[in-house]
Image (tube, rainbow, N blue to C red):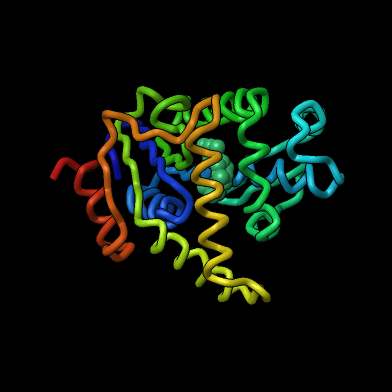
Length: 220
Ligand code: DC
């Protein structure tokens, strides 16, 4: 337990282990966890369900205007329906970066994220948390790993979920593509904040990475 409200920002590329590690830290410190990627994913799910082109900014913005995205407990709700599983499909992985590069989409999401962090202790993970959403966070971490390791982790996850017809090469290609779009977009690109603790998870177990973060937070 902590004796005051704290905010912990965790950023990094796809497959670096952010959400697994952030969830464990939140549990260990008994604070709330917010997965901001899930919010962009939920909007992408709605966009695709409606047959809207994710590259058409005006159409995506119109969808956003009529959409509610919410967290209850550790679950993500799209228009009041829980979509934890649906937002992890490969089709969402392939399209979410297009939706997430739209300025108005980011403004809307950042507002919700800042409100969530306003009154309580929180661990939040994403791409722009330490740089844009919570620039004054008490702790900032930048998690990374080699692209091969990140692709390998995502590939295994998809196999475990029973996805058919995927190859490691395709998963690696998709990750590299998302890295490129997320890091080069005009608004709030994925960059390593100068004041973030960098943790390379390539050769670490989840528990080792969690321990590293916790010891920094607890000042050991
Ligand atoms: O962390 P993730 O893989 O669930 O994120 C999905 C996508 O959402 C990712 O490709 C980039 C985008 N994203 C973002 O732009 N900003 C965030 N704070 C979180 C995610």
